[in-house]
Amino acid sequence: MKAKLKPMPSLRSDTEAERFVAIADLTQFDLSEFKPAQFEIQPKTAVIHMRLPEALLIAVKQKAQSAGVPYTRYVRMLIERDLSR
Image 1 (cartoon, helix red, strand yellow):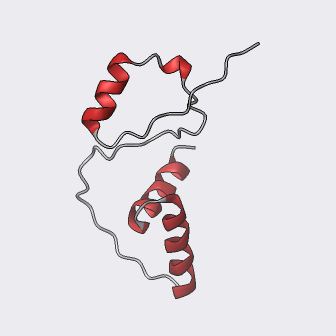
Image 2: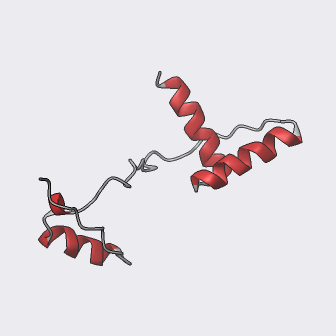
């Protein structure tokens, strides 16, 4: 029988997280709710301007909000995802 996994504790700072990871056995914790993260490393130097129907912009902003990111980053993520296929 498989042992029940512990829930992840709430970590309020990078320092707390670093301390936790340094001493914890992560195989004992339920990591099923974790999602991959992408980090913005490259500087953004180019700018584009586009006109959209207002309804489309509202829909994009709503999707971005539900994803928890600013809408401009969400649009960039969609472009990057499409180009990486």
